[in-house]
Length: 137
Image 1: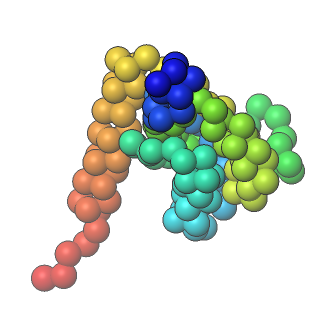
Image 2: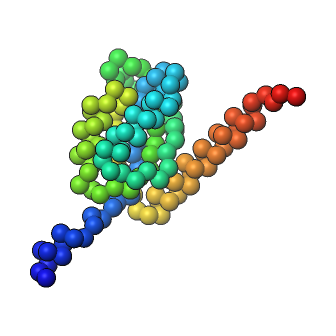
């Protein structure tokens, strides 16, 4: 078997990425599930394997984007073949939920640290929400 034939059967190498998706704050506040589903649909089309995700920073934008002055940065850690990056870029431009996107390739150490932070932030938010929910007595 030649080298060309053996490369055909190999699986593509996956890189570790952090994706930051800027979404409309009011859209996320009104329906967070739909906004997250929009982001996940983009990643699904790119065959990305999502490891962790969560909202990060919500606030005033430095400049107006598509008529919006406030935005929420939604972070996603995922594994994906590098050849699929064009799919994320193209699908993000077509998405109604995503205003802007940025994907950065990370080394394993930084990727794992970010996953830990995102998972910790998610668990902390859930614990806070559970503590603030009144219980029926």
